[in-house]
Each structure stands twice: as structure tokens, then as C-alpha cells.
Amino acid sequence: MAAVSQLQRQFIEYTTSLQTEGYLDDQFIQLQKLQDESNPDFVVEVVYLFFDDSEKLLNNLANALQQKIVDYKQVDSHVHQFKGSSSSIGAKRVTNVCVHFRNYCEEKNLDGCLRCLQQVKQEYIFVRSKLEALFKLEQQILQAGGSIPMME
Image 1 (cartoon, rainbow, N blue to C red):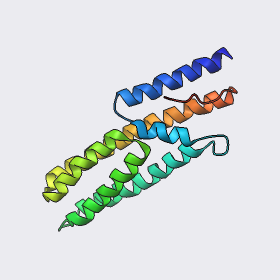
Image 2: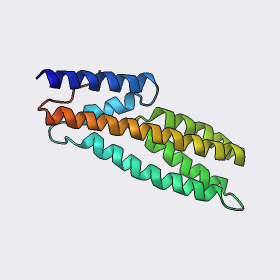
Image 3: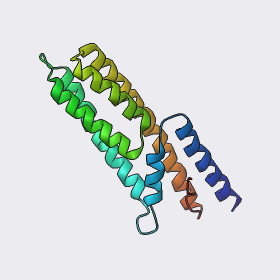
């Protein structure tokens, strides 16, 4: 049982550090609260949908910004979608970059947009690896017979 409580403590510390470092916000904790016995994979499923969407949106953004004549309305529409899906899972740093990205779209500033695309890719890769590590920790807790601790 000591192993379980140690894993649970790790889980809480890790989740807290992700919030402190600004990777995740309260929205992620709200998602965790929606998960229960009847829907034990809820958070993982929602987050993996976000991963799938993000991959598509990043590709769409890269393609849209490589056109000879960039359609900034289309770029902005992709960024708006990305902002929505990242904020819905609480991926705060991705959301924040999207806010700046949209400003560059409004200004039709290609350099700014390209810089933001790199930044948003980077933040997405960071949050994805952090969440995958968190899910791995969840699996270890469950396999050890423990329950996932609730964050406040």
C-alpha cells in the first residue's frame, strides 16, 4: 500500500507543478472532477481527442501559411479552433500562444504568424508529453490497486 500512496503523492505533486508552471489551468481539474466509476477513461479520451485535433490543426496551419497568398481569415479560423480545444482541456500555454497568433492574423503579419506557429507547436509538444506522463502515472496507481486522487 505504501507504493500506492507514494504514487498518489507523486500524482498530486506532478499535477500541481503542471498548474504552477502554467501548462494546465483549472479547466483540467474540472475535467478530472467529471471522471467517475461510470466513465473511468473520460479525461484520457477527451485529451486524446485534443491530441488528434491538434495534429490536424497544426498541419492545416502549416499548409495555410505556406500558400503564395495567405488567407488570414482561414488561418485565424484554425487558430480560433485550436484556442477553443486547448482551453477546453485546460492547456493554458497553448491557449495563450493562440491569443497572440490571432492578433498576428488580424494584422496579416506573416512573420508573426510563422513565429506563433513554431511557438504553438512547441507548447503543444510540451503539454502533450506532460499529459502522457501524467496518464502513465495514473495507470501505475490503478495497476497498484489505488484510486486517482482528486485535485482541489
